[in-house]
Length: 365
Image 1 (cartoon, one colour):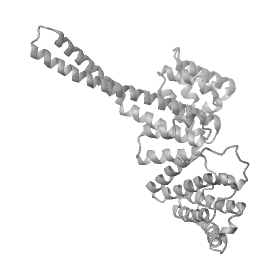
Image 2 (spheres, one colour):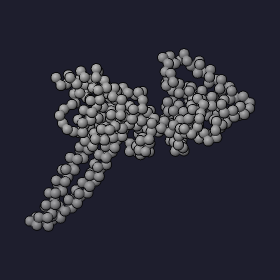
Image 3 (tube, rainbow, N blue to C red):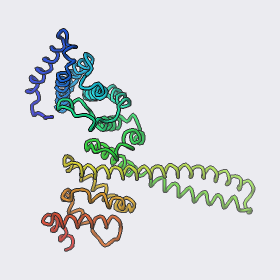
């Protein structure tokens, strides 16, 4: 899909295609004509491209107008490429129209349409059909829909990050090979990790828990000491029970937050790694975010041990923008982070020596 410097100059072309299809739909007997699967596929494919073109060029009204015509084609006659493909083309129609609605500012309507479609969506059709070029344009992958829902729900804040994770990420991420979807997932999860880190909620809960445990211990010693009056011991017992209840609640919340942070952190890094192994499309952005998360968590032994076999799957030249930072982090520690850092540095020096040796020498000197 092209982004035009002057989209207005292309509007005549877009209008021409739109008006041609609109006039065609007004002809008597069009339902019979649309029973021709190839014509139906071509008309729908043209409209879908028109809608995408208008969206990327910030012309949502053109996208919405073409969406109405696309819906009319679907109502005139079900696409008969293969009767078993109809549910998939219906999903694509809903995906395209909801995207047009979203870009027109009708965000809740768009979200509702896409969620409803996703709930009815069935598995992808990869490798099940041999399709013509125009037919493949009528299919939208489940990952594309998931990715859009993650972005929209996180923007509108209608569901918590844990709900979004459970519904659209938890089981899908490990099996997905859709780099665009994985990029949405990785960015969403890394954002949640940074939010947890920047609020310092884990640190505050830990500190409060330690203070409460100390106070509860002191209250217990008062309750057990017979030198104190019965009234004082009774009051200490009551306060101790209330304190223990608070400690239990805080401990559960702390454990949940720590598990959530570790899960999001691990899955976001794994998603970034997978993107870098699948495509070069997002390299400049993804390698920065991956290395930033990695370096920020240099003390996390468990994470770095898990990364030891994953990081080396990335084409080593993609680390070149971070060569100076990687070299500057080298030291004599025997941590999991240093072991992985050395692994990456050795690969860099071996595979791309001219670009990496100078950075290493400058650190050693």
